[in-house]
Length: 207
Image 1 (cartoon, rainbow, N blue to C red):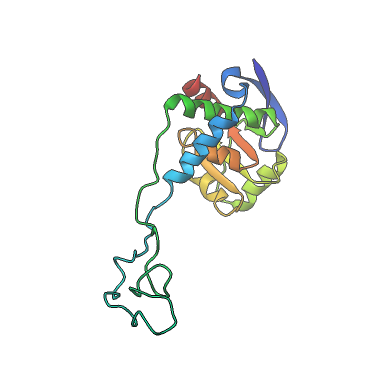
Image 2: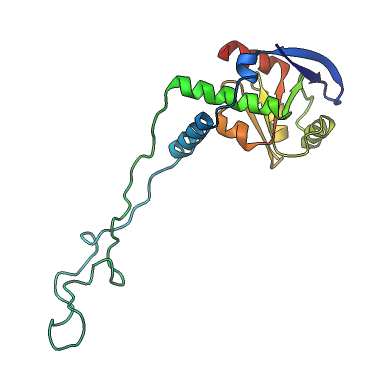
């Protein structure tokens, strides 16, 4: 079993906990993580872009000038893609970019992301994360105490509005619950800050 230190809000090591090697200690699959990140970004696209083809542009039924005697190339219409104000060749139309991946690959990608955070020393486990009031300064102090000076994803075991609202004003911090974490966010943020209860939930779900 893997071991990880548990910190209190002052940044002191107060305990250690065992981590499941099948979740935090597997061989990282970069191809699986890449596929899941591509799917996440594709599924987030609106797909509402649209441009007019030459068939949809107004006008263009008559020849703009006579064919012979002008010294110019013949033109049959003013709505061709090569004309100013003409239609777009292969114009984009509204469509869905969504595609699906199998659950096995998604689980492998998530475990790979978690293993990468543990292996790189970017996993920070807190014994608890409770605040008496909504205070961004207090939340920033906690991160400083546990030596998190870069972007981080903070994962909670259950919704806590006081903690979430305290973190909202920090530009490089995002909060999430154990059932909403995804590979994209885990890899995007430098540090993975998680409570002890959240780790237990993650291990229970993905074991």
